[in-house]
Amino acid sequence: MQKNFRFYASGGSPLVVRGITVPGTYNKVIAKFNEGSLTRKGFTFNGWNTKADGSGTAYKDGDQFAALAAGVVLFAQWVALPTFTVTYNGNTSTGGSVPVDSKTYVAGDRVATLPNYGTLVKTSNTFLGWNTQADGLGTFYNPQDMFNMPASNVTLYAVWKVTATYTLTYAANVVNGGTPPVDATAYANKQVATVAANTGALIKTGYVLLGWVDNVTGIFYGIGSKIAMVTNVTLTTVWSLVDAQSVIYDKNGADVTGATPVDLGTYGRDYLYSDVDMFTAADYSGNATLVKQVSGVDFL
Image (cartoon, rainbow, N blue to C red; front, side, top):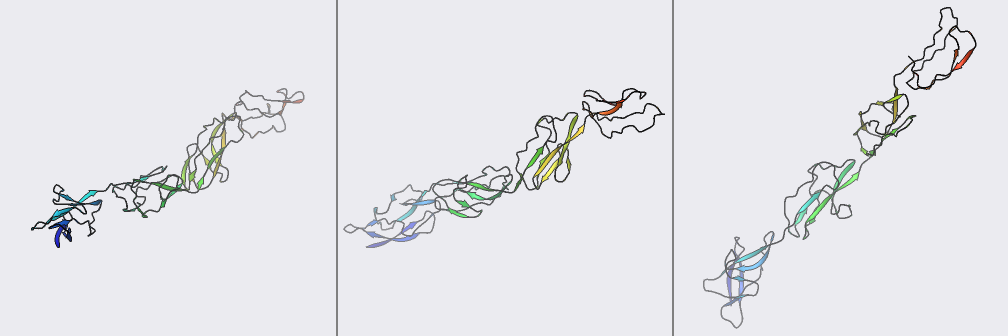
């Protein structure tokens, strides 16, 4: 004997299925499983109950119950599935923020990877996409690629590709001590570099460091100047004399004939001057001789 029963999907439209009598018994019915393929997102089917809230009599597949004349209404029961999340990691990014996926997923859900909404950046690198491993050896996904959610939380790491980089190098030009500054930065195209001070304590006797000059373009850069890097740059020291002085030769008498030496150079304190032919007496008596101006003497 067959009898119709109404099975409710806990608030949905009733699903009419056929119970069957048990051979050799009177008016007994075997509860059927979810033959209508009821589904509820995020839940798994867990049998039937005479009350929607599960507080009545529960029946699972194969259970027997009396088929009352008024009929029986059974409500589907559901158990929530475990949920999982997708998290994004900047993976050594230097700016911006990672996208945030606020959804929860159950195993088997189809998930779309997010674009770089947070304008995530990394100096001298280009963003390519996402990977299941920080070292890039896992599964790679472009933004908006789809994947099946596993039964675990997922972390996706930003994948970066190094772009063209440029170096800024400092060189010393005839110094008595110290070392040139070192700039270890790999500059991206048009990234701005700041010209260094004399961090290596370069010394050139009688001079002060004025700044740096580009060996190729001849452009002078003072300390703290800015350079938009579009190629490798080497800067060499530019020195200025301290208390620059000149040497003037005087005839010491209006009636002296001939021309005095002319020195077009300028000299700093403690500069070792070149040998010059000088007379040994102010009245030019005697023979000319060589005299040398030694260090430690200021010339006005």
